[in-house]
Image 1 (cartoon, rainbow, N blue to C red):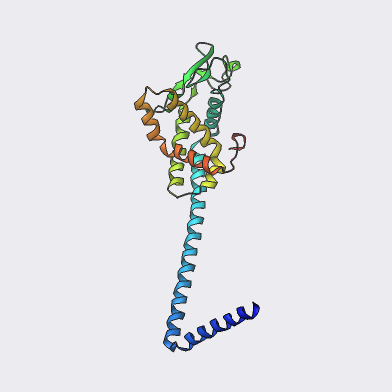
Image 2: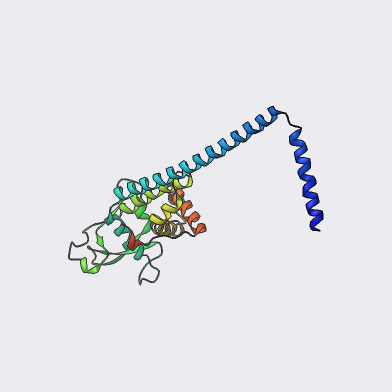
Amino acid sequence: MCNSTTGFLQITWQQVQAQINGLALIDFFQMAESLAVMAGLIIAVRTYLYQAKQARIGNSFSLIDSFTRNIKRSDIEVLEEIARSTYDGIYGLEPGCFLAYSHQKRKAVNYPLRDLFVPEGRGCYLDACFNDDDLSQEAFAVEVGISPVRDIAEELNIIAYEVLKGGIDIRIVNYELGHLITTMCNLLDSVIYYNPEDLLGIRSIKDRFGYLLELRDLLDKKRLPQKSFANMS
């Protein structure tokens, strides 16, 4: 078996040598030129891909930095409180709402989640707080401005657009903002689910924040690691 294999290789090599010997000198130069062109193309493509990857990484950090400049920590805190106040186990919570303490009524009141995303002006403001101990204080805020929630959603929607178009790196965005994206989309889902009669409003939510909802679905499929709210600045 070994002898037959060796014999086959020898015959094959002899055939290759015969073909090489039959080539003119100009054919060798043409082959060398073709190989050089192919090698140059390979290097050019690899360089382009590397530069594109570095550009996406740089653009990712630039856009996230812009997000942190436009969105204050207090805005994130409002979103955190609202997210916690929509937990299904809270007594007295109505579907599609969040609970906050009204200064005027001096008790917990259900506020529609859809009011968080009104497109006009700066959004709605509530004479409320998230802790009944603050009803007679100004420790948190006399008015809870819920327009920051819409601002956060709009900023995230811009970032989502860039991710989906390939302009920035999805892994960096997910690591830095993944939990925030999930939380915001959960609120959007509630608005859409609990307001089926408001067709115009549902269409508006899907149109205005469609990129963000699409990115959330993509992140769910990829199952990438992300930071929690507690670690976000």
